[in-house]
Amino acid sequence: MKILLVDDSRTMRNIQKKVLGDLGAVEFSEAGDGLEALTAIASTPEGFNLIMVDWNMPNMDGITLISRIREKDKATPLIMATTEAEKSRVMEALKAGVNNYVIKPFTPEMLLEKVKTTLEKLKAVA
Amino acid sequence: MQPSQATPTPPTINPKLIVPFVNSVRNVFATMVGVSTTMDRPRIKTDRAPAYDVSGIIGFSGDVIGTVVVSFQKCAAAKLVEAFAGMAVDPDSPDFADAVGELANMIAGGAKQHLGNAADISIPSVVIGQGHVITRPSDVPCVVIPCKTEVGDFAVEVSVKQLQTAGT
Image 1 (cartoon, rainbow over the protein chains, first blue to last red):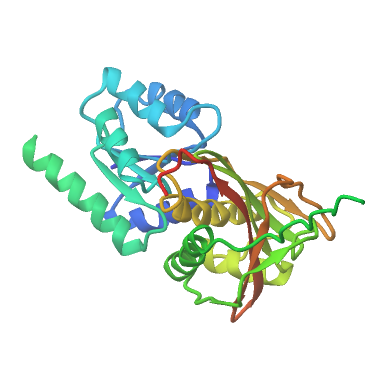
Image 2: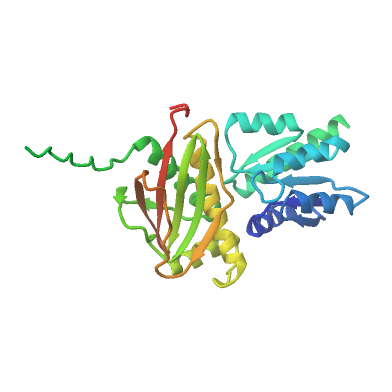
């Protein structure tokens, strides 16, 4: 399973790696902003099984990244993990094409549960 | 007869602006650091130097403007970052500043949802060093929330105001 973690905080990417490692055999790729993420996606023709995206990042933010990904790819599971907790932001992210939304701070259990639920739900409808 | 000079009104603490930060600090440290925090009574701060040596700074814009500084004792920061990151982090490494910035980001983000419908927060900046000074908007009072944990102290310095368009 290949997961791309997009967050400008290396600490947060490491925390997510530790938690999502419980999903099984996972190969992680990392990006510090939306532009790096697009490069990582372009250089991974086989694609990712999941992309975790922060909202506030330098160079290209998460909501722009989501829109750019969804222009070409409607299938890859995308989860926004962010401090942006307002309902209007959640709606904006869902409209842009995320499959689920995790609000920071989160416990390891909260993050893992959200990711598992999202992947299972998408698998069921595929 | 000389016109009498009006005495400036001393700044007051607006609980609507401070309580969201108090709750956010508790939530962030309990959820992601595994440390409980206690707070002393918030007070107005007049000097520009942050309370301690390690400061994570977040700017607010949109419906809410100003800055929030999360300022740690260096030894407390080292222990809190270790608990947050799940490993010891060299205070001179970029990862240390990264972790401090992310804590400040989560505190500000958690409070923001209760402050305004269209507020934005900046990417965090981190300053480390004794006696550093942070410039704040001169027309916005700074309220310091002293915080204690079992591994040391830190303070959250809130210098924000809601614009009239904010949903208050």
